[in-house]
Length: 405
Length: 129
Image (cartoon, rainbow over all chains, first blue to last red; front, side, top):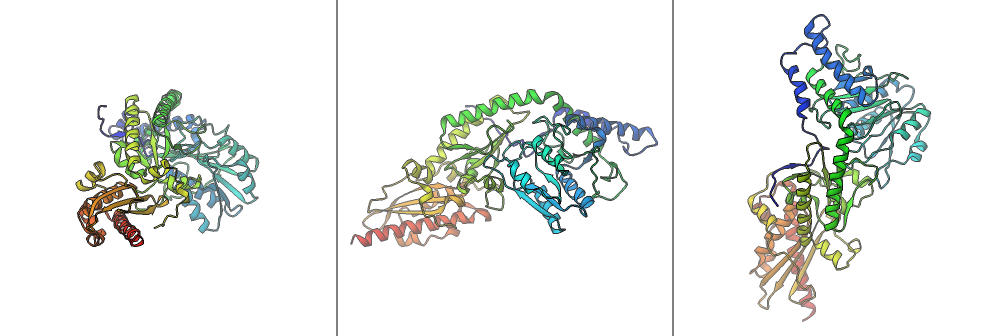
């Protein structure tokens, strides 16, 4: 086995910029330097044209009108603007928000902020497959419910929420539906009309565009109003002031354009890689569990629990593979992931979890190599593990009285 | 976060991995930590009739620092008598491996594990006398 140095398997954290995207952006760092909001000379018009073409590309991939897209600094800003903007605008009429315990921190924190302003928040639980229960959603709706915010594809476990069903429920109850689609764009087909989506957050750097750019879709018919968070010159239809960066907007647009043409093909390749790795690992290692629904998930995400092997030690063993740990023991907090906890994954198993992400620039060779090293390290570390030894001896680990520290 | 050379060496080539017969009167076993907290250490010592630790083995479920801490302490206790082994401080392990602050608990666990193994050995042999 030839050693390969530093392979990237963390496409949910961020993606490299596609060279085709970068190529489209370059002129906007150089000769096209006008302010896209300058209305009275060709320098401005030229920059504006790049931005507007980009807006069309972003709109197209979700079947929206370009006028319904505003550019932001990223999905965190979009999520903040959607939730706080809608809440501020309509807050005197309705004050109840429904979201889900496994949402991204920026959604949960925005809700917490709004709770401090008097809003009531319902945090829906998830089932063991990571999906929300639609009946629970229906049950938690009241006549005060203003907005439902549920993400499309989960960043940590890759599961796909039933967006169309959620959209139907929201529309028939006259409730706005916001969805964080940072991880969903280019991974699953999205149609804001068919899915009755009113607001959608989009990120650049999860789809091979640069960091620092994103977008928010805001429905015009029936119209959704938001209060802006940034005061200024009234750019982006008054909803997001500040001069746009044409280069970044063009990058996001081109990234969407590429996905409009290549999503299906790319998903097929990623599905093949996922199967290769999953089968390769399962064939050689028993007691490896996939976290989140096996059916309703994107192919680029494998979140696995390697029972009896602590996640961080496994990451050290496979240090040439850039993956992410579900145990979160690498960060300052020693708590395992709140997402896995919400799925009901036991803490001891959550400590053994890794997220392996595939993407556009992953190669078959890398997948094979990674599978081999993971198998080798899991076996080595299990030989080191007292829990593995006990399990082989038939000792029920859950029956032992452990001294928690 | 960069780990020290000593730590990486103990993680990649851990010393004294294995198990001894926990029923043997010569063997003391310490099992500390909890799976839900992300680390469990099993440390065993084999004591000869002069009261000297002639062998030590470990198995650890935990991060690289936990594995390295247990590997190191098994090396240190070999050839020591029970009192000497009992007096090993976690700070000595932490310093030797240059553990970062968030990993200090791994060295504490290793100290607890050797103490538990010594206690187990003493308990067994008190009963039998």
